Image 1 (cartoon, one colour):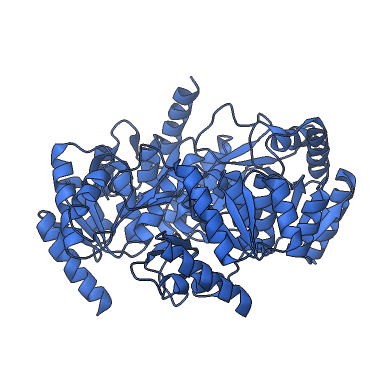
Image 2 (cartoon, each protein chain N blue to C red):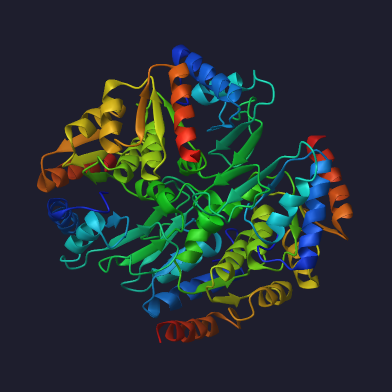
Amino acid sequence: MGPGAGGGSVEARAFALGQLIARAGWVLLTGGRNSGAMDAASRGAKTVDGSIVIGVLPTDHRTRDVSDAVDIAIFTGMGEARNVINVLSSDVVVALGADTPGTASEVALALKAGKPVVLVDSTEEAIRFFVSCGPALVRVARDPTDAIAQVHDLLTALTA
Amino acid sequence: MGPGAGGGSVEARAFALGQLIARAGWVLLTGGRNSGAMDAASRGAKTVDGSIVIGVLPTDHRTRDVSDAVDIAIFTGMGEARNVINVLSSDVVVALGADTPGTASEVALALKAGKPVVLVDSTEEAIRFFVSCGPALVRVARDPTDAIAQVHDLLTALTA
Amino acid sequence: MGPGAGGGSVEARAFALGQLIARAGWVLLTGGRNSGAMDAASRGAKTVDGSIVIGVLPTDHRTRDVSDAVDIAIFTGMGEARNVINVLSSDVVVALGADTPGTASEVALALKAGKPVVLVDSTEEAIRFFVSCGPALVRVARDPTDAIAQVHDLLTALTA
Amino acid sequence: MGPGAGGGSVEARAFALGQLIARAGWVLLTGGRNSGAMDAASRGAKTVDGSIVIGVLPTDHRTRDVSDAVDIAIFTGMGEARNVINVLSSDVVVALGADTPGTASEVALALKAGKPVVLVDSTEEAIRFFVSCGPALVRVARDPTDAIAQVHDLLTALTA
């Protein structure tokens, strides 16, 4: 999860995360739109053979808004309520820059649902707040590689 | 789409439909539960190498209710509102026995969204009603093989 | 519940239904839009002192689309998924002309949720289909006055 | 909006807020459950003659979970996705103790939807985070009386 309107450094991080998620053999689920972190992560994943990218979209039909790198588009027609679905359908939520309202809502909904969250590139304010909100569920990663290592640990714990 | 509590003949038809959908190289999307037409169609699809089955579930987390034959489970936590997502995310809706309320709601929502619907094993009452509701969108199939032929025509028309 | 694009006779019926619902002291819940049966029923209700009209809208914010006769607008931003909310929030569903896809989805969703439905001005095809779908839950009314009498009986039974 | 499991001081604040909202002649919209801030605010509002309390519930039918102080219950059957509806249907969101995940998701969704938010009894971490997230939309109130004064200003600005 990450901002729909990301700048260059956010997109580079998102691209790396998508690529590492696909290399780990995991399915990538994003918000599906053709912009920001969603699109960059999806494109990163599609550089890997056999990758699967699911996009859960706020809109109700296919338009140019859908990232070309999404393999399977789920159209909800439910606007931001699709954030709930993103979170419930994920085993672990990786949030890039959780200081925008949309991503912040996904982190908060993940904590409400009891899902582990890994924060990457968050501001100090976001880290302090979300750690206070869900101390047992929130982890902070230095960079995409560290995030993936932490996801690996969390998935191992979940399936143990 | 089809009844969650199907008897033997519904399930045999659903199994055949799932298998034919996968053989055609299409992604199968179902309601994802471990019962009735959803489960049978998903199991049919998984007899085919390389098949992809998406299950869009009414529940908010993985339980025994999820069909083992679902590859990717989307948890909505939204009950019957997930029927809207099923329909919006499908290019063509194949409805098996549209005379149960849940499946009937999916056919009606598909017509509202302008999606083509192929009815298989419907009652006379269901056929007459849905044809009156959406004459340009509803087709009636004799059996799974005929349904797949009609889906093929519809997809060709959609991408033309 | 009724068609968003109703002609004159549908709207006259809807207006009468709204007025009779308000006179009975019940809260009227509609789809909230400024057109067809929704708007006419809401306007009918507002001719009665002390009436309350709730509109559950598919959109996410107030526009000209909201009927002026709605007292309290619930904005869902969820498109047709709001039909589920309409039905779950009603004690009895009165459907006017259930042969349009949107209204048909509401009747089907009501039957799925176990809610009683009173059909007014339905076609023969709609009556036959929905009676076959939910024989214990569907009633057919001759006109708005008969519909209100049947709702009264149903509410008495529900609270008995 | 506020925590479903509130202690005594949160409930006293919520009760006061509900009462002041009703005295101002505004409709109170809450999450509708029979616990925490939702219930206390609703009970506060019902001490005022002519008050109207709307509860938008996560569940799909009436149970003991619904606050007795709710006048009109909207059943969504959509779990936390109803948080989106709460926010979209409010002109101003007053959040009590926004440091729990559910309330935090509502504040974030409100900011995403461009709605003004007044924080009462928030932690320092929550205030810093949400001000960084939506500087133009977030206000901090000292207590319920101050919160109502700020809502009054915001509503005056909205209708100007």
